[in-house]
Structures are given as structure tokens and as C-alpha cells.
Length: 231
Length: 209
Image (cartoon, rainbow over all chains, first blue to last red; front, side, top):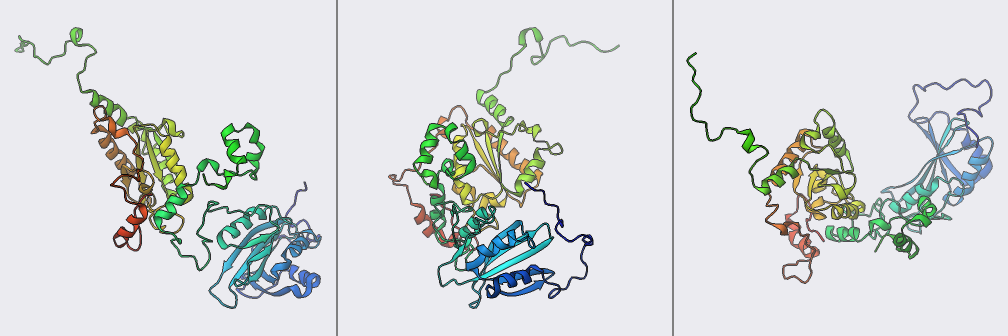
């Protein structure tokens, strides 16, 4: 394991960072990684913009995994920290939905936001970047839970915030009514039908480790697949 | 000196040799008095109300005055469930299980607007009042309630405990399961339909499944 010192990869003699003043709303210097991305991937990389000193670059969603792999492994980029994976749905026919990835390079002290437009008319499917960043696992599960985006190649794509038998859809979509689709009594009876002791699945590491020390009835529940959360 | 001792002793005077160790009262009064002054709370804190609850338990407001300083994090040893904060649907089976695990006699305080009614979270994720899941004895309003409000609720609960027929009426401890074959049974979906115009501001329905 290597200890990363922030800014360690910057050339010798680079001045220490100072708190930026008078940052323009739009414009300003773009993150140098944008030029690197253009040189490496060409037309896959779309426009970019700089807002409040932070660079956003639009990319092709289908190529996100190799872009992320390059950003992580290229010695001149070294984006070693995946900050967030999320999605935004707009009330906009031209841009119905976007995927958003935030990455940070500690050695270069850089922050980069990547966005990719999604077409809600087609199947929402994006390559998973879990093979690149392990921390994408839960973040992508959250996007799947809330927006219904499927991540191809994800190892364990289940709901994470709502319970697994939740049947009303994906709550952060614009077509989702605020109070849900079912009546209150239906929602409550479905929620109460979940077995609170069957919440864990074999995939969850701590339980899998302790599997042989669990009580016999809980082992049976896990093996029989009741771990889906319903009795 | 002008003072003369009473020649005949009063009938209520204290006579240690013959009265030592004797008090007469009703057994129910004694049981209720003991229960009301040693309610062990099971804290179910999910949100900002739990912060106020912690303040209530801390030294300034001092729940120990009510015999409640011993937080029972095991429901098996708890007397009163204090639900402090919003309860999402994902926690609904958990809080019901905790209530079922508490031994009788048991009481429930619903602390704050969210636990009592769902509060401002009238959305897909939050239970619209824990009384749709478990029976509630005292509702404490507020967002969040100040410690004084919670203590007022606790004192109201103490009054309730002190007035219970705790010995004579054993049936009050029976937990009644829903019986769909009963003539009095109305399905929850039907209650939703009937109560639709009478909910709160917009849509809220109050049935329990």
C-alpha cells in the first residue's frame, strides 16, 4: 500500500496551494486532464465547461469504463479517488437524463466531473466502473435503486436504500409520484411483510465471514434465499 | 413554664414499638407507584428528536429524577419505547419487532411531529405516524420537542400508569392480533377509501394493515 501525499506528483518547485480568490463563475482555466482525454480518446470526449473553477467534461456513457481506467492508471492523471457516482433527471427533452461521476487526483490535486447523457427512451444501461474503482459498488447500487439505471458488469446490483422487495419503482425519477404509487396501507403492509432478520444476503461480507457461527435457523434462512427480504 | 404535657395521647401519634414497618395501602397503588417511578426507556432514536432526547437524559434535565436514567438498549428489559424521530418504511418491521419483544406491561411515547404523523415528510419513504404500526400512549408534539415537552409527556405517562387497574384487569395486557374473520374487521384498503376526504391537508390516510 502506497501512501499518497496530496500534490506529490506535481513538478518540483510548484508553489504551495493557496485558497483561490475571485474565481469566475464561468470560464477560467480548465483541468489539464481534459486535453489529455481529448488526445487519448478523440471524439468520445465532448464539450467541457468550467464553473466556479471546477471542470465538467461530457463523455460517451458507453466508453466510461476505459476512460476511468485510463484516468486512474495514466501516470500523468492518477485519479485515485472516486468521489461520487450519481445521476440527474431533467425536465428537458433534449437532455432527459445524465450520469455524473466525480473523481479526484490526490497526487495532482485535481478534481474532474464527468457527465454522460442518457436516453430515457432506450434501456438505461451504462458500463459499471466497479472493476476500476471498488467503491463504485454501493454508489452504483444507489443510482440503480433511485433511478433504475442498470450497470453492466456490476457484481451485485441490488437495491440499497429501499428494501429489496420494493415494488413501486425508482423514487427519484420525475415520473414517480412523491407519495409513491400505492396507497398508504398497501405500502405499510408490504413494508411490514419484510422480515427484519433476513435483511442480510450472503454477498455481504461480514455475514458471509461469520456464516458458520450463525444460529442454525439463520443459516437456513440465508441458504434458502429468504435473504431477499421477504418471509 | 406554663406548658403542660398532653394528658391523653392522640390516636394518630407514632408509636414505634407497635407500628414499626407498617404501611397500609392498596396493592395496586403500590405496584403502579413502583412502575411509574422506574420506567426504563427503550430509546428508538432515528433523527434530530434523539438529540433532544439525549439532552433530556443528560444532567441539566436529568431523566434520573423519574427513575429513567437506565436506558434499556435491550427491548427485553424495557418498559417504555420512546420513538424519537421519523420512521421510514424500511424500519417499520424493525420497530414493530422491537415492540413485540418488550415484555408487558409496556408503553410507547411518540416523540415529535415525524413519529406522530410523519410530519413534513409526507412522501414515499416515511411512515405516516407510528400509530399505524404500534399502539401509542403519549404523543409529544414539537419539531423537535424541547426536553421540557418530553418530560411533560413522561409525566403524563406516569399519570396514566398510576391510574391503571394493574392487578384487577389482566386483559389489558393481552395483545390482540388482527382477526380478518371478525365481523368488526374492515380491511385497511377500505379504511383508506373511506377516510380519503378526512385525512390531513392533502391525502394522508390513517389505517393500519
